Image (cartoon, rainbow, N blue to C red; front, side):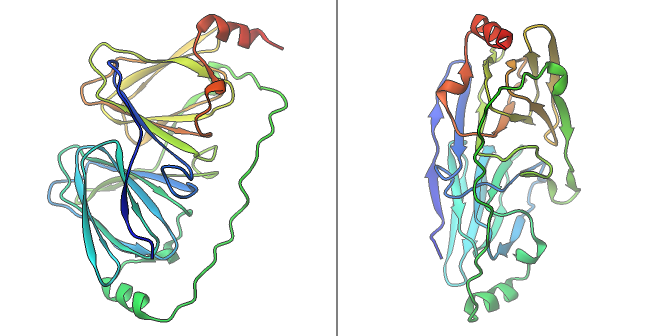
Length: 292
């Protein structure tokens, strides 16, 4: 079993608010297949309490703090996550439990395989039997990474973007959990995640467009407004629910403002960071929109 470990994430300091990110097979040491976030956990409640045979996890405290205990059946290690620019890698086959949630804590988690109930071990004694028994290594066949060849850029407008509401797995006793999976609840594969936090009052973010990138934008804490432009029309969306996300098509200008105190903006993106995909000047954006 690989060792669980803390991985430091990039942190970009900005007077308009800070930004951190994590990418497929880079800061996150596997290909993302599932993304989920845990919030509104009551004080004194523990989450987790299971192992997964084949799923690797990467967990970030986007807001607040909590402790994660990782157990391989022989040794137990406890990690405290309390900074948005650190993440914990948990190898497959390890027992994990999350506890000591602070007020307004938000846990962002990535998984290496889609949800499969059969992959879970939810009883600790069964976990010990699994660890000690002779068992074959299960090789999971996965589809080759899809390579997208762009021959023509489709021009979307602001009315092609919409709010997507996800299931809120609500528990009065344990808090809420929202899950998105590539190609199922999400219309693209997640290659990168980043989040804005510590945004001062009155500041704006965004002010750019992407040529090819698709995004899902979620207010996992607090609220803010996203204004989209296609060069002819503008449309504004207020995001203030952690189980709702704004799906943003490629080729649209976006501005973010009206950040509430303590707000956290999470973005799931269809590609890793590429400078050439950005359009940061509005006049250049208009030219891009007018191209055939």
